[in-house]
Length: 391
Ligand code: AMP
Image (tube, rainbow, N blue to C red; front, side, top):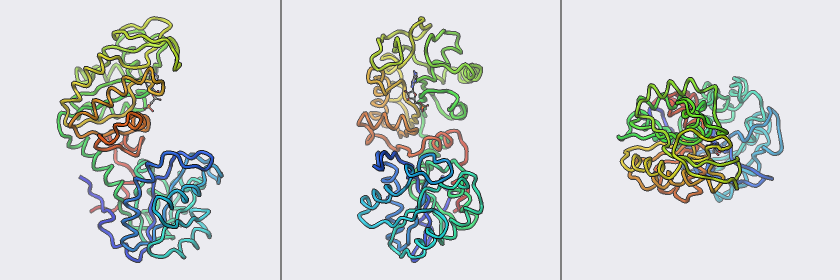
């Protein structure tokens, strides 16, 4: 249940509306790369324009060190957005201060302004109330549509709501509905697929899902730490020794709910051209490392996925960036795409994998937020959402 007010609940006509979007997208030499996050924000922007609002957008981009840096400027994003919307997008060279204030003042109903990178001010990440107040002074209403940053209490995501009434945009609402429902009221059986490099990033998620999911399928580098916790040597495989005790506890608590790969693809080095071989799960010989799940595991996991009511997937099953070690991830992608389950994919790398496999259109919901989607699956409340007005 989504219990926050959304843009449907406000009267935006003739108002200046500050919208926090997540335009943290790949930029190379001022050229916009994958623009999924811009596309995902368009419904909210268009709706507000149709309602007769003047739309002031703000976002962070990359990791500037608290001051302006040309390579993280939002200017190219403004140009790209103008193309996507088919209209002029004004740009202010700062997100607060005189330039932002005069640009916001001049903005009329039906027009769009994009402010410069919010992280050009160190105060943004400190959730500084002075900065939040200045941002808020640009508008009459605040909308948060930046799911990817909603797990951070920053000046533009949380602080600003102390000075302006805040509601959710369509993207934020959609993300919270799908991810929230998966953890609170999933269609059963509920199957979680967890992969990626490390256990440590996802311990909280696995713990929370143990009480909610019917089965947790483990793959990727994180399986190695579980193998080592079971007492198998994993040779040169990626392993997190500091997470061994946690892995042991999780294995004990999970019982048969947690499934580990039954076969593996080994490589003789971490390289796209490495020699490889398939082997049943067990002790790994010296000189070898685990880089993917094997075909029997794909078959076994696919059977579980086929019978699922809800599938949540975070993290690739192997080093899918090397084609030779991508079969496990693509096999699972195919199984998820083929199932009739409500399917939700979160986390940058698994989203990239599903897009590369050409199966993205078969997935119910692809999340735009990595860290934020993990925190949702962990059962945490996101500060950027908590700060919005209740329904
Ligand atoms: P994450 O960001 O935690 O989802 O991790 C994604 C990364 O995990 C990808 O770049 C994969 O290459 C990497 N990965 C998956 N499986 C393995 C493995 N068996 N060994 C090393 N890295 C892996």
